[in-house]
Image (cartoon, rainbow, N blue to C red):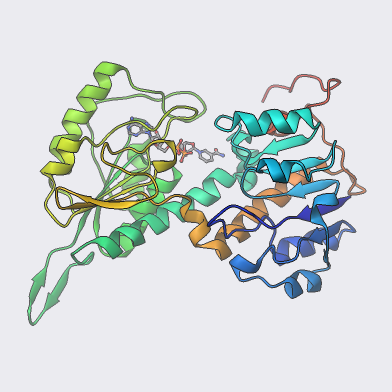
Length: 366
Ligand code: NAD
């Protein structure tokens, strides 16, 4: 088997699918790795380090398996050999054109987003590894924009109160945001529609905000709220948000636009100088006044909606992602390190979103 590590072409995408340590784990087992020159540059990984790990620098697109971070563009898809295997974020729910084009080319596309969230697949869970980066970085963005301190300070010049931080949507990113805010000395509070999250929020030393709306969905995700529930939630949040210096929103519902949690009126109710960091900008934003990709000030409140935060911390984001990718790749290899995906395995059956062989039998339950 040969694995190609391509250079990401997307603007602002600084991550790379495999780091040298992961390359070494493959080459030491006799798997050939070809790295496109400069693939690691923006993560500060020079070609040399890949060579030392046993890779060659060359045409990474011409490999049996191609590993990537972001969904491929049309130009990139045309470089993938027919029948090759592609592993990466493929946005199967959002980028239908990309999925169609990969199917037409007969590419076996494995989408990191589609890996089931079962315990056996945790080591491959790239949504989680990258959400951890985003949650952490969101707090730093907030602290940077805030006109106040995060920690409580007692100084000769007076005492400063700690910042109060509310995190709306406490999945993986939200939990990391709560923990990070606390480490910076803020007082954090978490809110979610899945009631089981309350204990997780308390376990990172944050308070739980209960608004009396429960909307657990399938597979550990939230379901979309009904019209009534949404109106109720917005009203109750409007009251709750007033007292916070920082609001970080991360609420998502798979395959749906981001739920609107923070209305314009809620923003207006916040103290001037407060900050909202909206991590849901890619699917429209959790705040009514969010402008995806921009930082704006409305009613004296700074609203930041950074896109692709994991790419702003490319070294560790790539290291974690590489571990996820190699774990998935491992599952596809037989004892001789040859590509032999077993589509009766639920992880491979679920994550393969294009080019599933017709002979593949339906996945075994479990
Ligand atoms: P996500 O990114 O899909 O959503 C973020 C959070 O937003 C979720 O907690 C969700 O409940 C919340 N949300 C959605 N709509 C909301 C609304 N209207 N109001 C308030 N909050 C709302 O979630 P995620 O980070 O991918 O995690 C989802 C779940 O999957 C979590 O329970 C997590 O523990 C679980 N998980 C399991 C595994 C595993 O077992 N392998 C791995 C990772 C995550």
